[in-house]
Length: 397
Image (cartoon, rainbow, N blue to C red; front, side, top):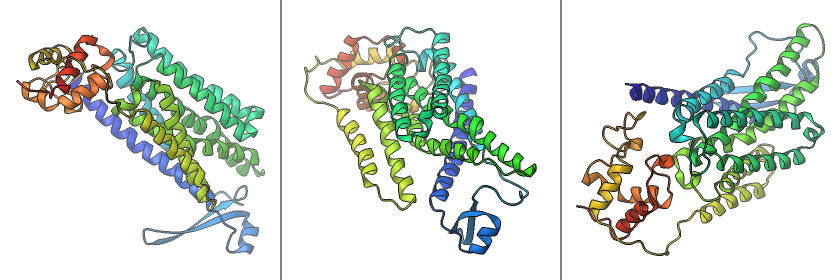
């Protein structure tokens, strides 16, 4: 029953997180696009009288829209005034729920890899949470320092710090645990930007209008800076959120370099679009992003050759699978926490083992991603036997 409940919580939590993320990222992308497309107001007298700084005319869903941005604030505050915050909060809260449900409740399965670092369950959880907090604290201090006024230098320092974090995480956690915590660290920075900087600044601007004062434009400038930073974090966060499905990335040798390269590719691709929104062509940004992804593709490409492993019989492989894999990968898993076979891959009959031979070889031999965390202690000799059996044609019973 416990595994059944966990599976339901996992499904509902994941769905809610995806929906909330779509709402947040959609709003973020839209407002970045909106700001980049602001043009001089069509009606100059109205703009001067109301303090309108720019406007956008758009057509969507069969209707015409006119969005205006005030230079500082409108003469009077309208009712209702819509705030964009719960998209960010609900995304982060649901993300933390999923992080705890998957990686902390079952830390010994998904987070800890004793071949990487011999961490206890409490130590691994504390370390993961420390990275989330430290990431925000260091980033925020940098933004508030003189470096925060020099964006290129700030970006260079943040790249170096993110690379250091990626290196540390991949030398503390399992591959998938490291990648998800890197993404969670960036996601925490994004949500904290909204909670600690953007929203307080906007509340101060509203308060000033209510009290009859001219809002301090510094609040708007700080909010704008953090909002722009958030849009560049978006693509790296999205990729790390789905990375647990792709052991090719998370279990790669020098996985921290792969993580940095893929994240940097996302930043450059997003840069290309933000500049394009302003009417500035920067194909070099797009080219750099694609080149980084191409470099990762080539670096991770399976290499042929090598010493061929001695062939093994199906009976030997079946015994290995039964001992090392079938506790989870069965029609009715016996391993605690699994209500059904991961990815619906069952290896509890001769026919199923033979049918899944390419996947077994890929996960257990090529990527060495399975057994997850090597919980069942598959040996090198056993991996070699699976390799030999597969290379000899993966003959069935």
